[in-house]
Every structure is written in structure tokens, then in C-alpha cells.
Image 1 (cartoon, rainbow, N blue to C red):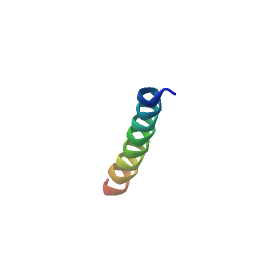
Image 2 (image 1 turned 45 degrees about the vertical axis):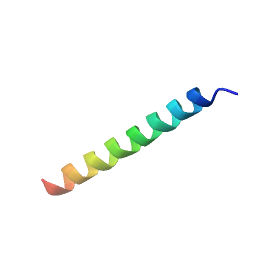
Image 3 (image 1 turned 60 degrees about the vertical axis):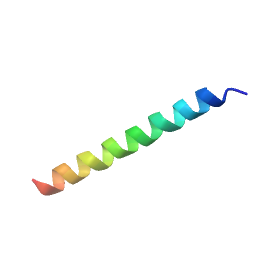
Image 4 (image 1 turned 90 degrees about the vertical axis):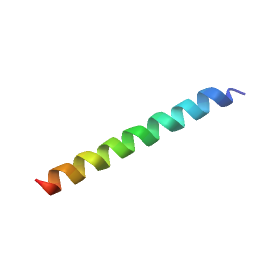
Length: 30
């Protein structure tokens, strides 16, 4: 089991998703 690795991957996925939504919000605002 590599719990830390799994958590890291989850964090990266969450970060990527939040960044994507942030880009969408920024584009819609402009």
C-alpha cells in the first residue's frame, strides 16, 4: 500500500480540477 502516493495523486487531481474551474471562471468574468 502506498497511502501517501495515493493521497498525493488525489491532491494533484483536485488541484488540476480547481485550476481548470478557476480558468473557466476567469474567462467567464472577462
